[in-house]
Amino acid sequence: MSDRSLQISALAIYFVVMIAIGYYAYRKTTDHEGYMLAGRQLPSWAAALSAGASDMSGWLIMGLPGAIYAAGLIEAWIAIGLTVGAYLNWKFVAPRLRAYTEVANNSITIPSFFENRLHDNSRMLRVASGVIVLVFFTFYVSAMMVAGGEFFKQAFGTSYLTGLLIVGAVTLSYTLIGGFLGASLTDVVQGVMMMLALLTVPVVAIFAVGGLDDTAAAIREVDPNRLSWLAGGSLTAATIVGIISAAAWGLGYFGQPHIIVRFMAMRGAASAKSARRVGMTWMVLSLIGAVSCGLVGIAYFQSTDNTLDNPENVVLAMSQLLLPPLIVGFVFAAVLAAIMSTVSSQLLVSSSAFVEDLYKILGRPTADRTLLLLGRGCVLAVALIAGLLAINPSGTILDLVAFAWAGFGASFGPAVLLCLFWRKITNWGALAGMVTGAVVVVLWSEIGPQIYGVTMYEIVPGFLANVLVAVVVSLLTYQPNEEIERQFDAAVELSKATLVRTS
Image 1 (cartoon, one colour):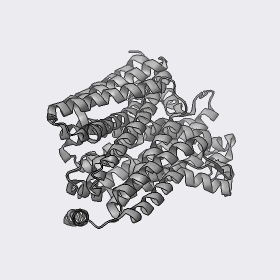
Image 2 (spheres, helix red, strand yellow):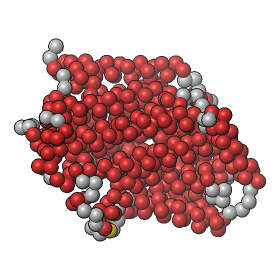
Image 3 (cartoon, one colour):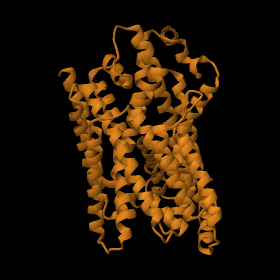
């Protein structure tokens, strides 16, 4: 078989496995809650790997290595911020959220949790949350489709549009039929593939360059500062702002619906401890691999006659040049896995936002089968809109992901934390803070001022503005409510009790 045939065979095997898993999940999914949250019976290891795979997306294999290749270790502060943020999310948010969503009227979406937690009879909080989910996830899915189009263009020489359509069609096929369970189980396979690819490519490249010493020397030959954690190799005010901006990606974890929904789907709050161990191990290894790919790529292309037109294709290019064709095919499948795992999760959360948080508030009696069809229809609609936006992308993959990540982190993150850990937050405080955070992100990304010559990542001002507004408005509108107090105490006790039983 030719090299291209072997690569296509590997991709075909991957596609068949994904669709088969989707069909298996379809047979297990009988109602709307099962489609959206797998009946709250997701094993801890599946929740951990699913959260990681849906979190990292195409930016892990394309965006982050590309940023490291272009700028050096200064961009690795993103990885450090994400690692810290993910750990805190698993440690504190996961067990409390799993318990609280059960206590708060068995909430199965983040917007419904906000409404039930804060007893918001106006429904405005739920509607605003649902709209934010649909808007930012449409941009997020669009970013992943851009990654898919670029992948096929680089890997197989197809047109960008052809690649975009292939990724969209395959992801839709297993997401539409398999629902949350299908997305989560495919995420497990995809997460393992991503990690193995990111660890294999830099090791092979180091040997090709001549070892660690030769690799470091080649990087220094290009630019000694590429191996420095500080921009320009020195600590300046601009460098500090840049580090804060990069590390602030970690703030986004508390508000990403497609990640924290995995906490809600676990079998119980006690699952968070074992899930944290699995998830953090996977994450650290994957991020080390991604950073290594970017750095080693600098050395490899410096030491050979090969050229790289787009830094975000560094992993793809090195795998094509260094690995056997069949293995290259599986690396390509891992890149697709990174893209598709996130797309499927985000489509499902968008679907739940439409059905649970917008359609259901109309109060119309609807059969469960109809809700299931509505959910699948929304998956299709969001995918089509995102695909249209992706036809003419306006930025790098990392830029597109950064905007959506900031939007969720700054609008939902403070609301989630305050709902879980502060008794006095009110529905009006949460609503005012949420809208403020979203608006600040949009405005800052367009006209944000530079600080010491560096534009601060929009999640920082958005997150801080949200917290300030939410706290002030809550203090002004707070009124004691015995039922809210009872639920808060019940959630605290449930999360503690389940953790004690397994410690």
